[in-house]
Amino acid sequence: MAVSYILSFMLYFPEDKREYIPAAVTCMIFLIAAILTTRLIIKISRYQEEKAKRLEEQLIRDNKNQE
Image: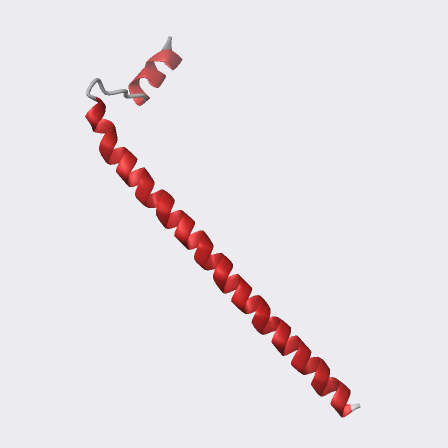
């Protein structure tokens, strides 16, 4: 009994379906922001990977030249 009361208190399904529009817009904004952030992180990661490879190759070449 208490569980069903708590669940019915927390869940709210409006009769007027227009109340879903602001929630859908907000969800889409955050979804787009999450996708853009993920793509930015991947792009930066690839750039740092290339930079690390160039530094590693330079260190290997310098080490071979010193020997």
